[in-house]
Length: 195
Ligand SMILES: [Zn+2]
Image (tube, rainbow, N blue to C red):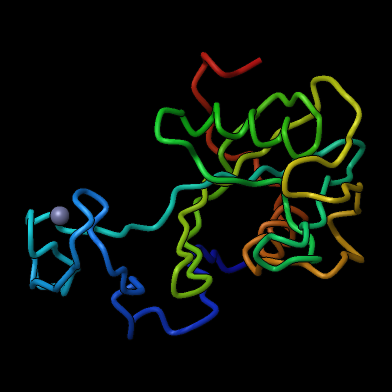
């Protein structure tokens, strides 16, 4: 099965990857634009602050129990509301990606997980203001009973081979297909997080 790690829903190449923001987050003055390292970027006329916008780092977790995968239905305020996805979320600034995975899964599903391996890293160009780089982890349940929380309104176990509910992200569908086709073991994780 062909490896796929870049997922796009629009032509991100045509776009600086950055919808204009108007005011400087440092001093509040209006932004202009500068040419910085061959890219047009917002720059503050007053204090010189340059606004760098990068893809947001995130994690998603393939939790397997009894050959079934746990999926969550996204809440009404979420991107792709009402569709389903692997438990996932953004990594906080002071957080390791493995810590973020433990936290997000706990918040969204109520479960404590044992992370087993890294099974992929994806670039997701979802919309003009939503570009993510997602570390995909494989995990099993360590404790707890699934209960939807945070951005999810429902969680349920599915056969990863399908049928699946309407999925929010092409990347998740690809992960599930590849998991079924190859039963990927993945890369080992930091011993400090292995349990
Ligand atoms: Zn400024």
